[in-house]
Length: 170
Image 1: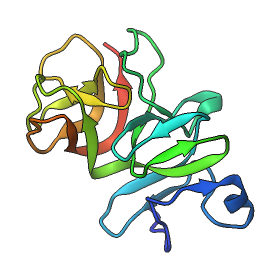
Image 2: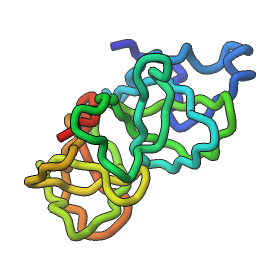
Image 3: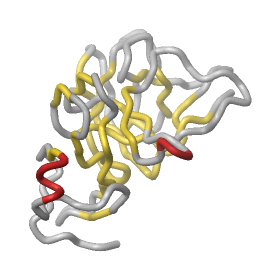
Image 4: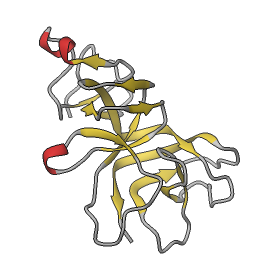
């Protein structure tokens, strides 16, 4: 994977920044010095994202467009979307770009402390948009490629390991 000198995953970019040569082409992937991998995405309009929100990265015409993960799990047979984690906070209008993390250890928003929030447990969408919860045994959708690395007992940020996660409908 490409190591991009000067890449700042926490920075927010506008379309004007891109015209001036700052940022990257949508879909560009880069790795930081810790081996964490990110993809450069357009944030869908009217998104209020905070660091730790899980975002879908779209498919087809909306590929590499970040939208907050819905609180409802996708229906069986629905499109499978790649997901990433927002590493910066932003209120997006049109034409705002960020780096979404897709590989490595990071913090995500956990909103359900009654779930199986233990190390090694996969995650699933929670009742809060952008949030997740542990899913030990479930017939519901889960996020393939996102597992917990530490026990989370309080609502808030918790540690997970990402390996190119995607929504996996039940």
